[in-house]
Image 1 (spheres, rainbow, N blue to C red):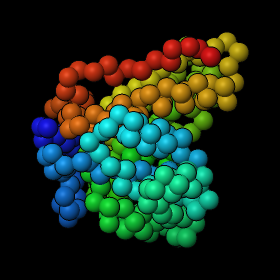
Image 2: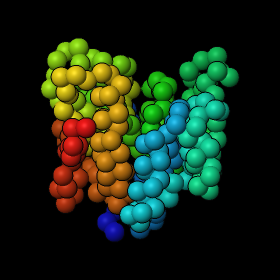
Image 3: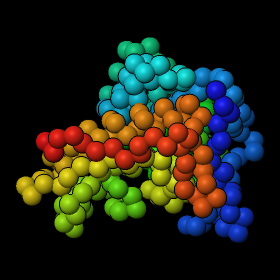
Image 4: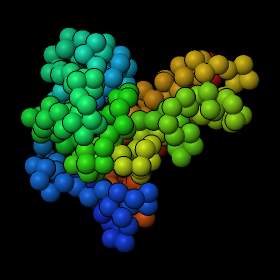
Length: 253
């Protein structure tokens, strides 16, 4: 297997390290920042709730034989249903409750302390409902990936399905992207789209988008595990072999 080309978020030296136009530089103190050639990639997944995307990632990794290991699942809530599911699969789990910390920085420090023993090649956010500090993002620069329930750059933030219906767009979906300090931005790895129907509610649209999330995120994670993802000089993502990177729901219902 070829050595992966990790995204270099410091490619534009004229950009501010954490500005809207720039990307964070990897933390030089973080050990083993680059996956080793030929080794199974170690993936740590962060969740806050039932973890349906986490389940899709775990199941696809096992069924498709990715060169990867789900090293741990960590939740921001001790009662997150996804932790019980992951534990039942034999995956190490931890809870780091944000309610136990007075500041975001203190929470992120504890979160990093829970992550680091697993020496992750990638940290995958799967319904992780906490805004991460620039320091945390910089520590895992090029290794931190999120899935957002909209076709970014449209509808960052919360209530994306209601926003889609309210603005009258005919297509909605999800985006798998590298995380940068600017919320719900960053180089796009893959997207999934679904039609917005005339009688849609936010709940019905969310359920449809979730189906295509379960296609797009496992595909993107597999490309990462296979070392196929690189970043172009203009901060767009390239995936070797040029696989389809737009996923569409086969049925509108």
